[in-house]
Image (cartoon, rainbow, N blue to C red; front, side, top):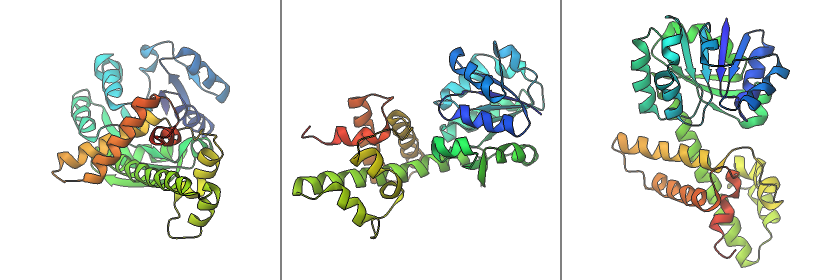
Length: 288
């Protein structure tokens, strides 16, 4: 299979490298030609433009937003260039309602859209051990791409119809964001009372407050001040916003989602979109 990989940033680059190592012919495209050229070292070919993607059997997108994915296919015209029977896999964090709309539009071109967002961060992207959440209406298309997806992830979950993967990703990241916010507020409160933050994390990790953040994030990136988890603050704020919007769309009152969304939006606006998400604690530390 010929695979086109659009978006080779922090996550997309190692994911594309995993696909190439699995033996697929991979052509990459990125708005930054310099970024795309780095993929040559991993056995990928670089497209000069969208016309070079026309021969792809499968197009994988790993882009910042669902709107950019939509613009790629419908605004920039990639949908017109691909053959009927092609499969589009959006592995970005996109709005699930927008994914369903794009899927309907691509159907008219004979292109099957699947959503397959990921969790695990840059380290697991490099190892090919991501968690992948797969949504789609075309079961035959899902069957055709499963081996490809397995080159990038070792935990594959079918989540249901089109958009369900993106919904699950947003909800997962809301839970993660809420957990980090709770950890940050606990550390800041404890410090003001005179508790040592390192000792706090040690206790949390052998108590009921233990979580992904206490295990893997707080000491290195917050207490030690590295702030380099590899996940941008703006992206996390976007994902929590998608989860909040999803709750509104289904008519569910989710006040915690609303609060967490406001907290991360405020941190993003204060610090900047591209800052590491662990730096949100700086924005919430009002004494600084």
